[in-house]
Length: 226
Length: 231
View (cartoon, rainbow over the protein chains, first blue to last red):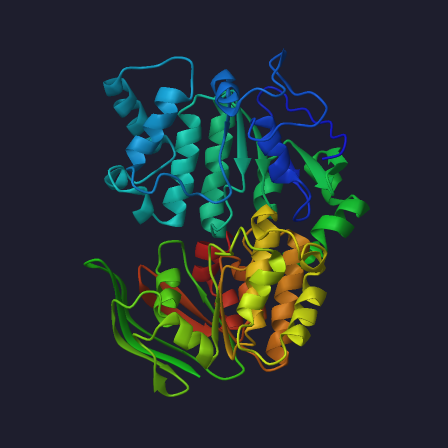
């Protein structure tokens, strides 16, 4: 990363795009405390969170999903979400309450009800994606970081994901999302930030960004092909 | 080249693929589309010998391969770009690629072609594969499969995690491989690009083929447009 300035406002959905290897995932990893920045600051709700541990940052209200949706293969879907409910926020509910909350959150993201007791290793891609989202939401974040949530989904499934993402924002969570699927990122983002080689090369409304020649050359290519 | 007939596949005792029949002829580019959970990955894992709990028949060049081991199929000229990439994260990029070319006479020539296709892999050839970005790992998985100079290349969602520009490049290079005579079976969610690139397509839903035909016909089929293209 090279002198990147980025802001996400309240109730805002910001899309982060850029060529492979541009540093998108790295940026989300730095914001969420998985990696420390070498220099620069990150502030959240007026507080400096630079260099805090990932679990502290999560409890302060920033949750994240991961590109490859694999975690705890031998837990059930419900147990996985309970981890977020129990440990992702400073308020710790009782075990019974956590079980109920986990099921409610899974229902919110349209996770199939009959599979809440299924081991994670037996879930398919769509179910894993919904589960990841549920686990992140279980932390009750004020800012949600989504790393390629709709990757591996077909256009119809992606459309459903867009609806889910909008719902989450409408309930008061800001979102910073990495996505290569143009119909998703253009359709869902209020603003788009483009990274290339660790530098910000564009920041603006979706229609401004798709018409930016530098963005077309480095990222979009022949957009008519999509 | 590849003929699958009456294939049934099981996970434990659960049947996930039902009476599947399809074929890929020499030099053809064929795509299989369908929603997640339809059984596409299970089908290729059965062809490639990872999943052997199956009945029916799979012929490769007229020879039955159902139940064969993956490494024997690799020697026969089958290569897979797996959905989850499955690169070796602690090995350098170059070693990942050379592994794909095991037993080949002239791996350097193929390597050169792959570096032209994905220049970033040349830049990063000494870097541990696990430190690559998601999209770069996808390029490496494709490159590794190409290193074996396969006669049948199977790709399970190669566009996953690639930028639009790079997705276009990958599809164009697959088309180019097709023109050079490579036979390709492509599983994709990027239905529009997949159908634009391939001659024929199959639609898989709930473990069964529900539709098949020329790509042009499928692209203009109202049911496909509604279910897969998001119209």
